[in-house]
Length: 104
Ligand code: AMP
Image 1 (tube, rainbow, N blue to C red):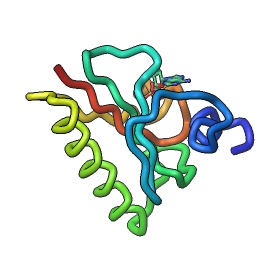
Image 2 (image 1 turned 180 degrees about the horizontal axis):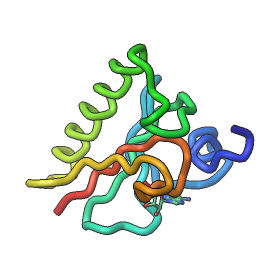
Image 3 (image 1 turned 120 degrees about the vertical axis):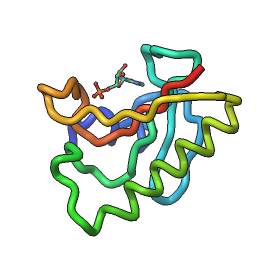
Image 4 (image 1 turned 45 degrees about the horizontal axis):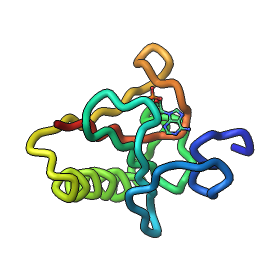
């Protein structure tokens, strides 16, 4: 976890363009945006992949979705994709779960 990029961003040790934060999560702009709006909604809790979540994480996962929807509205995105990349074979590069919000 010491070496986790997103833990370091959450801790403020690595800079990011932060759009939102609360007690459960942080949302910042993707460094290589694929759409006009491309945010990563990241829980403060370090969980490597969606394959590692348990039932107790269900409220947290729901909260991340809610935050993404609120941010899409705040940034005036009329339509967007919410995406989890799961595991190396699923295109995941950073092993700290994050919800991609990608919108026009
Ligand atoms: P994934 O492939 O789902 O693991 O997505 C990781 C995302 O993190 C990619 O879209 C990267 O562009 C993004 N990323 C990597 N490093 C940074 C960083 N320092 N700040 C913001 N986004 C980053």
